[in-house]
Amino acid sequence: MVLSYCLSILFATAISPMFSAMFKPTIATTFTIIILPIGIMIESLIGKYWNISTWKLADYSVQLMAETGNEYYVETLLLTIALTVLAIIIGILLMWKNSGTTKI
Image 1: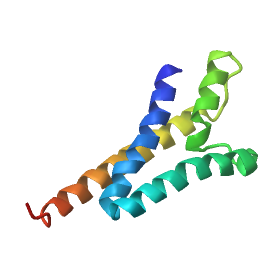
Image 2: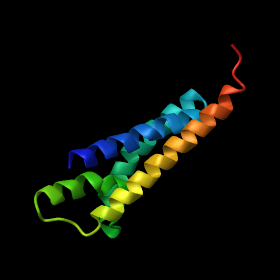
Image 3: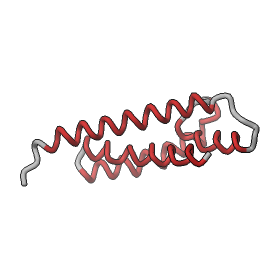
Image 4: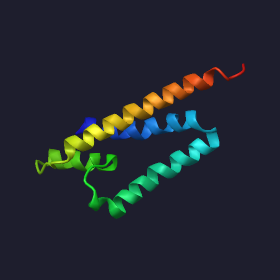
C-alpha cells in the first residue's frame, strides 16, 4: 500500500519536470498547478464511469489493505507505472535536447 502511495506521488512529481522541459517555466508551472488538482476534481466528478485511472491508485490500495480488494488495481498500477516512466523519459529526452541550446 505504501508503495502505491509512493507511486502516486512519483507520478505527480514526474509530470512537473516533463512540463518544464516542454514549455517555458511559467507555462510549465501553470500546467502543473492546473493539471494535478483538476485531474483529481474530474476524477471525483465523473470518475465512477471509468475504472482504470491513475488518480484511483491510492483508493484501490486502501481497498486492498482492507481486504475488500478491487479487480482493477493491477491495471491501474500498470497504467500509473507506464505513464510515470513515459513522463520521466520524455522529460529526460527534452531536457537533454534543450541543454544543447543553453548558453552559459
